[in-house]
Image (tube, rainbow, N blue to C red):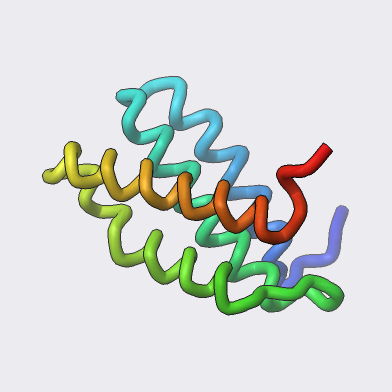
Length: 103
């Protein structure tokens, strides 16, 4: 049996992903989108607690944007879709700047 720890950000993140995968089987598709962006926010948060991982200002801003906009999925679906499209475009642009978009 594993030793219980009060604060284990990696375990908490994995638990969230697995529970979300199961839950997503029984709910509307748009909630899957919500769970994925919530997962991204939680991963950024967890990374700040894991030695060796660096969270820069771009990722902090991304997390703040997620946390400020994710609830729009419930009542403002068109605004949520536009925000998420813009967020994805911004991340794609940043990946090119960081050299990740090159083969």
